[in-house]
View 1 (tube, helix red, strand yellow):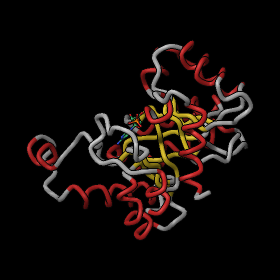
View 2: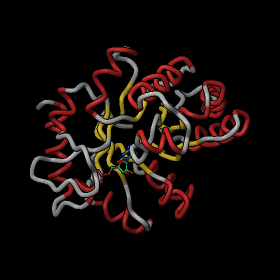
View 3: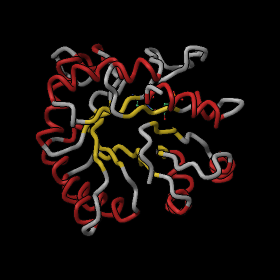
View 4: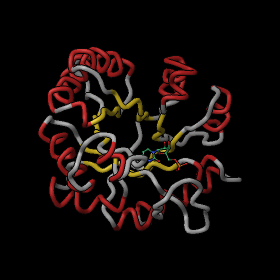
Length: 236
Ligand code: C5P
């Protein structure tokens, strides 16, 4: 377990790349994000290896199915011992409630993983909402409504941009966590991220957790860069 609120996105293809990366950190306990590519490629063995090393895991699989299927799937994920999982808010309040039930059952009396919702993917925009999905409300209103649904279902928070953290916290309370990607140090390139924020600004904007990928994984010294990100986010 770790107290770190800086989640490193392990966007690597192979188990060996992950192990080489983690080996650099010696005794440091990290919070890492395992996404679909790594999980579908390397499976449960990869999760077990990361947990064995004492790191915390956000398993980013974005579940979306009928409530009963999501409940059963979450029962399995909680039993793996991961610390955070997620679902699509568009799956409905009933589906999100079922996710929590499954997590509680799978955790078997231990603390259940945090469960957060994806609202509108950042790859969607107003045109897609209008023309393809036939959702004619403004995107910001949709995000806030789906975040409210997540809270009503008993979820712990949402994924959003640091730039949206404040408004989410104002509407839904500081305990409702915001997990925020799109983080770069001032000296970095933005890569394919459109709206980027430094760890310091994310803290000022009330992000609960930041998700940081290439800034750390692509750095010449990932350990030093992680420390810099951590210091900025913690306000050291
Ligand atoms: O390398 P970078 O810091 O851009 O990685 C950010 C991580 O957060 C990636 O794993 C990406 O898939 C994820 N993410 C994101 N934007 C979202 C949701 C997730 O960048 N809206």
